[in-house]
Length: 155
Image (cartoon, rainbow, N blue to C red; front, side, top):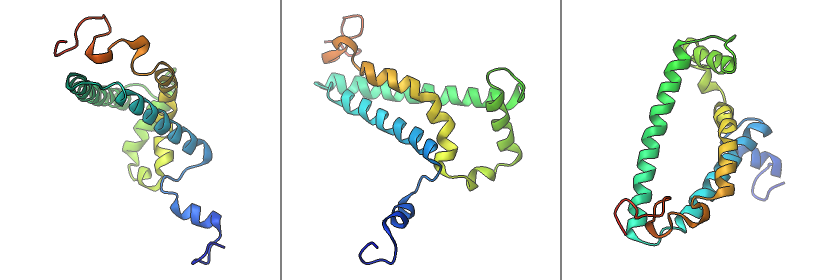
C-alpha cells in the first residue's frame, strides 16, 4: 500500500496514466516524444548567436506551416478519394472516412490510441533524424548554410 492512500503502487500509477492505450501504443507515443526531445535538446546546443536563434525560429515557423498544409491536404485526399481496398493507403482511408460517420468515437478512445498511427509512421524519420542530429557534419554551425555559405541573415 502507498502511504496515505488505500491503494497499491499499481493502482496509483494507473490513476496517473493520462494517455491511456495499450503498451504498444504508449511505446510508440513515448518513443516519438523522447526522440523529438533529444533532437530539440541537441539543436539548442547549436545556437551560438542571435543569427542562429533567428534562423532556427524561422525554420520552426516554416516547418509548422508546411506540416499543417501537408496534413490538411492529406486529410482532404483520404476523406474524398479511395476506399478500404485502395492499395497501401486503404486502412488509413477507411479510418479517416469512418471518423466522419461516427466522430464521437474519437472522444471515447485514449489519447495514445488516437495518436498511435501517426506516432508509428514518424518513428523511422525520427530514428534517422536522431542518428544524424540537426547539424550533420557541422554544417550550419555558427549560422552557416549547408552549402557552406552565410546563413539567412549573413555571417
